[in-house]
Image (cartoon, rainbow, N blue to C red; front, side, top):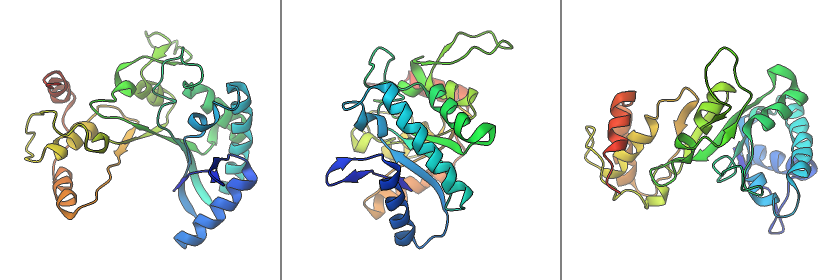
Length: 242
């Protein structure tokens, strides 16, 4: 479940307001326990009004509230559904968030067994930042020969986070970009197959919106195929005609 924290048209992340929204959602869903609770675009909406330090302080309070929800068996896990904050370069101070900082907040609140386990970001041919730009700084691993700046997917792997990709078709804007058939006739289905084949442990699913039965049936064809191997994925990416 994704909380879009609005009150009177304004974005609100006060735990008291979030509590009301969780209770309302549980009633609407007719569920005692929500499997996954997302906070929707919190930094994107708040960075105009507060500094990042202030935002991280507020996020600490929210995570305390979410961990209490877990203890009360009202949710099982929580995460951040985002549009730009994990895909923006560090020099964009009002847009960029460091994933490790967020994980450290979760650890400070819930310990090593905290329940902040998911992030959601757009990933598609036109928005490939999560897999190509090393914009996430992270403490180096002494056992590995690497630098401290990683692409988001690698950082999520290192931090043992789950990543959900969204907007694989960029709301239909990319489906005319030619891809190899990959055993699929429909161009949209090919894009879905490519995005769900990104070779990263952390990428557990790719979300796609569908409005028509025809699109649904075409997209379901992807489920009949195994994901592309890493070599074929790389070959397909290199062959894209922009």
